[in-house]
Image 1 (cartoon, helix red, strand yellow):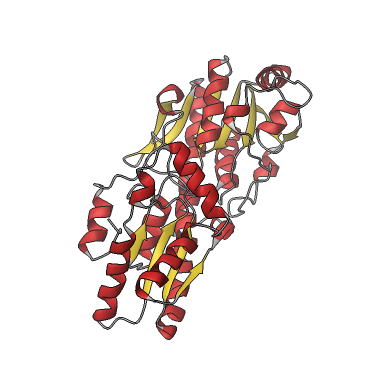
Image 2 (cartoon, rainbow, N blue to C red):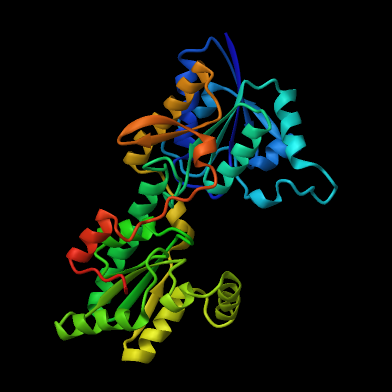
Length: 360
């Protein structure tokens, strides 16, 4: 039996992409007598322009602990997929032609929400697609966990841990800005794990007065410092009530004065209570380094789950994990949906019970 599969990684990189691809190929190679694997360079770009290479099982050896992606990646916005490129090329038709040219049995796509939308588009166009949920945001609907998330939590938590010593020494207010424009899962988990005193996430709009009150309360209790874990997409209650167009204008105006929302919050805190505030932005190091043991195991399970689906010839699915078990989730049911943090989640409730403020 011969199987021809294509693989690509799209969107932002993370620590466990290689581990997941390894899981797929190793599981297939132990079952399939004749396996051909085509890796597309730099995500959908490689599929569009026919840039690929044939890989062997050896190419997936020794990459379990390696971060990033051996295939390279790029961001190809879903909203532009139906728009011809600068030379007039029909991208969707080009991807289909590459797929058919190689006589692929299926295409395994690793990526986040935007990547998943395009994966579903290709499914609708008749291609055999399996999507594997990658993102440090853990915001993909239909799976309890995405690979890359726990590794990023570890790094973001370490950043907060490191800030604790200097914050204690100087008696300052510190803001650690964590990745997450639309969803605050990473900030929430890292904030709790790192012992942050205030956590600000997009799903729970904050009142700057309540943020300042929480800092002043700690000061009155004789605590020398306060640490805020702030998501990139944290939003005030006032801004949350603005129409989308007005909020976009507000963001454009803010960008001329502040590098990010954290610097605006720092300035506001200083103006209200006079506290000296420092901002730390770990940035892309949250995506880097080797995958943590949890992600290595999760990626191996997801990869093996994808291989099993390929052998069963069940396509048009995402391989997710629900209640600890690998599940095949129809792409039609999950594509385009974000998994948000609910203000009523037990983890939010627990954080509030131990005194963490969300500024609400």
